[in-house]
Image (cartoon, rainbow, N blue to C red):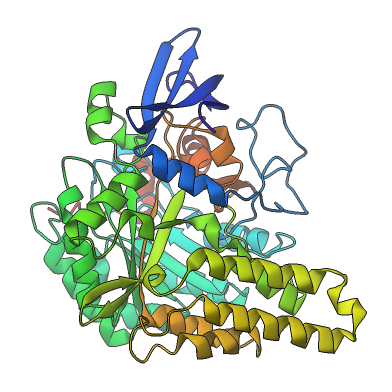
Length: 508
C-alpha cells in the first residue's frame, strides 16, 4: 500500500508534478519536487495504521452520466466535472457573497481583503440551482449557501424558497451566526422559507478562542425556539484550539435537542491561511489527530477506531438502490477526505454505535442483500417471492450483528432497521439521526497536501455563475478557480459602495 505514487501540484506555480505518499515515523507524508521551486513535504495523515484501515473502504463511484466536459489530460486545470471524476455531487456549495461582518484569519475569501465584491444575482443563483438538479443519474440532493456571510443577502429567503421549489431535499446555510444571534425572528423566517440546517462556525466554548461565543449561544437559543437544526463546524488549528474538541462535543451533547452534530474541519492552508513551511507543520492537524484528541478528551468513551471513513456507508446506498430500483446518493469520496461516527448519550456517557453493532458485519450483510437482489437469485423463483426471501435472510443476519443487550435503552434499532429494509420506510432513518449525535470531520486539501486521486473522488462541489460544477478542493486551492471566477463576476468595492452603500462593519 505504501509507498504509492500520485499526482500533485507545486504550491508556488501550480504546475502538475508527480508526488509520493510514504510512511515516516508512524505517519503518512507526501513529498514532491518542482523543477523550478524545489521539494515540498507535508504530513498527509498523522497515523499510518488508521490510513491503512481507512483504505479498506475505498470505493470508486459511478460519476455522472451527463459530464460537463470530455476527459481532459490537463486535469485539474479545466473543471467542470468530466469522466475523470468518480463521484456525483452529494452536497453543492453556492457562494452567495464574499461580503462578511467578520474578518477571520483563515477565511477563503473576504470582500475588503480582496478589494472586490462577488455577489451573484438572484437569477444567476437560480441557474446554478437548476444546473445541479440536472445532474444525472442523481440530481444533486443537498445545497449549502455559503460565502462570505450568506445572511447578509437581502434576498436569502427568496433563494431558499427557490431551492425548495426545485426539489432540493436538504438546504443549509454556512454562517458565523452573528445575525442569527442578534435577530430573533431570522431563525423562524429561515425555517419558514424551507431551510433545514444551520452550519454554525463554532471554534470553541471559551471567549479566548471563540470571541463571539455569547452571540452564538443566543443564535442557538433562537434556532431552538424555531426548531431549526444546527451542526457545529469548528476549524481546528494545532496549537490554538485542539484542546477545545472535547468541550465542543460536550456542548453539543448538552444541546442535543437542537444540535444534530459536530463536523470538525482541520485547517486547510489556502486563501488567507497560507503559512510558511515551519508554521504550517506546527499547525497541521489531520483526521487521525482529531480521532486521538477525541479519545483523550472523552477518556476513552470515544476511541480512535470509532471513526469510520465516509465511503464505509456505501453498502447502505447499494441496498436501498437494489430495493427501490432507483439510483441513490453515494458518499464515494476518497477514504482520507472524511471520517465520522454516531454517538448515543447514555447514563454511562458516550456510546458510539459500534459498541453494540458489528459494523463490518452489518455492512457485509447489506452488500450480500444487494448482490442477491441484483443477481439471478430472483429469477429462480417469482420476483416478488425472491425479494421477500432475500429481505428476510438479510434481516436475520442484520439482527445477528446487533448486540441488543448493549444497545441504548429505548432505541429499538431492530424495529427501525426492519421498517427501513422491509417496508422501505425511510422516515425510520430520519428518526435514527435524531436519536444520535453525529461526530465527523472533513479535511479539505491545500496546495501542500494536494492529491489528484482525492480530487477525482470529491463529493462536495461548487456551482459557479459560468455554468460549471467544480470539486471543492479544486475551487479553493491549487489552480484557484475561486479567484478566477470571483474576479470575473465581481465589481470593485468602491463601485459596490456607490451603488449599495458601505460594506458591513466588521464586528469587534
